[in-house]
Amino acid sequence: MTKIGVLAVQGDFAEHCQMLKRLGVEVMEVRLPKHLEGVSGLIIPGGESTTITKLMRLYELTDVIIGRVRGGMPIWGTCAGMIVVSHHIVEDGMQPMDLIDLDVRRNAFGRQVDSFEMDLSVSALGEVPFHAVFIRAPIIERLGPQVELLTSLDDGTPVAARQGKVLVSAFHPELTEDTRFHRLFLKLAGVELKDRESH
Ligand code: GLN
Image 1 (spheres, helix red, strand yellow):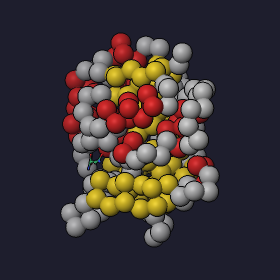
Image 2 (cartoon, rainbow, N blue to C red; image 1 turned 45 degrees about the vertical axis):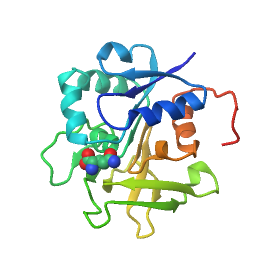
Image 3 (cartoon, helix red, strand yellow; image 1 turned 180 degrees about the vertical axis):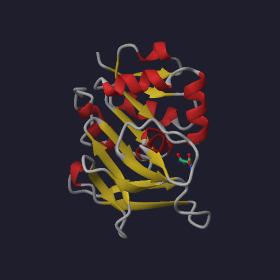
Image 4 (cartoon, rainbow, N blue to C red; image 1 turned 30 degrees about the horizontal axis):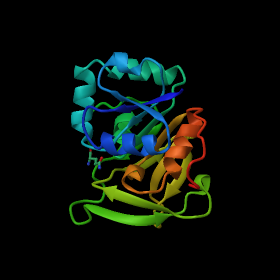
């Protein structure tokens, strides 16, 4: 059976694991390079991107993950995960993994609007809007020419995108009951789901 890895060094990895298990997918919590063996895709969760970046280096995961993704392994970064996989972080000294050609800005909504929720239209997920939860979220400031925009806020700010098998979202699908974003990623990872749920 296909296994999906969830980077489990910091952040809300448990919620991603739960969602995947609910969909009947075998999950591997990734803390060390050896945990990546045999996984068909990796999710980097929300949390604190500086901490995640440091811990990934400490556990010698960074280069292994970069190598696997360049070799075709699908990856999905949610919120802090999106920051970690980006090409460049605007006005921040941290070096991201450069797995998708976009520039992001951290904590882009400021302290006043720390967290908010919003229904977004995501055509890749069908007609029903997706309820998006934003928590101290980043935004995408620049999308490279190869990057497909998946959805944006009403003011046009891009908040989810895809380039090949690299998926990013500034919000947290794992904190909702809606499994459609996870299904989209699993499709990229070639995971066949026995349909237990309507969506
Ligand atoms: N603000 C966090 C960061 O910059 C991301 C927040 C989140 O993942 N919910 O890393």
